[in-house]
Image (cartoon, rainbow, N blue to C red; front, side, top):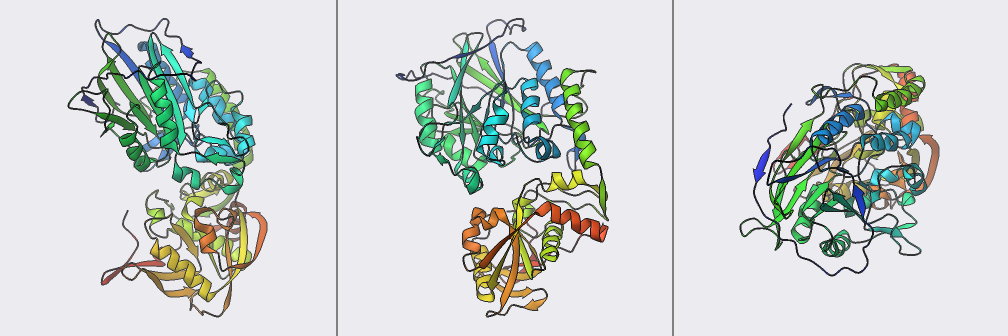
Length: 537
């Protein structure tokens, strides 16, 4: 399959040399044996992914196809490009960890091994790379053949950067500086107890300083940014010494490179700016950017796009990486193949819709923990669920993939006034904060008067003076995703010690077959009309 909507624009870089006193180490990539470019031109090829989330074997994804992705296919594609191109860098925008049984069982070991075998040159720190704590991150990445680059995460006690902030590659004479950073929103959603020993530094200030200094030793400067598309666009306007940003976090599909204009003096009179790239998630695509270089290694043009990792990418038989991934998978299958229940129809979980309306899968999970704790109602952040549940038999593996986080279920007592205050906060900030999923609760969010009304708990109108039992998850009760604001009136916090997914598993075993609950328990009032929350933001 060809690259999706390739585009070509022409520009010329005039790199400004900036005084450098504190960057000295260089890393060299060997270009020996690769094919030579056409006479008079040179090419630098950048291959990139982001948010792969432990999706190491092929999978089906509605809207994209069946049997897509997988690191064995990705490795074969990388190898084919490197075999026919003289200068190639393979980069990643963070969130290697979390999202499938490969992470739940191996805690990153399988991911790091796979990325090393794929030949990645660098990644940056994503929020989910800290899901099992900072010490686990360091331990799992210690044998990696590639670095985590991060210029804005430091130790709280010393202020020293945790990871190398940058690395410079020499690709047959073309020097490429790679910088890493994590964005503000990605850092904020990282659980507080996973980053207690770390501090967050302003990414724009950190990257601006380093990129200015790198101009004296790099022809091209690239930022690996786990910040999200909107933050990347803003940074691109301010970081004139960064030529391109490979992003992550928001799982954005950028079929073409986005050129953001800024004050960069290195570009031609007509085009001044920084390219922004992102390649969706899970290794569904590999992004490719070809920079055309003149004899002085100044960029004179580029083309870019996304390559779908489908069956058109052939995996050689008996490849080394296939054998290793098969070994990991066999161990997982032995643990997760047990059937625990049945789903009458597929329960989708849209990346966009989950933040603006209640979904059947979210309601099912919330009802599971509500029943298990004998609570009056329940609430979780929409991000606590990562993937759909298919129709048919459901295995342990399905539940782990859908609910990979080790969040325990927590209960509170809260009065009706506290519930009204909580729902009013969600309503007033609708569209600006994460979405939530609910069990045992119906209400209307009035986006004209910015208040919640018609609130019912367990089918009965809310009583302001009554005490209710609320079930949630530890991620929210610890203060993440506005948990401090939601539960500021709650009392008698009690952690059950049971994981959310374990309660769902027991619920499935008890009820055998689940029929997805109806959505639309949360109604959105806009102007004079009310409707179930259906539209994307």
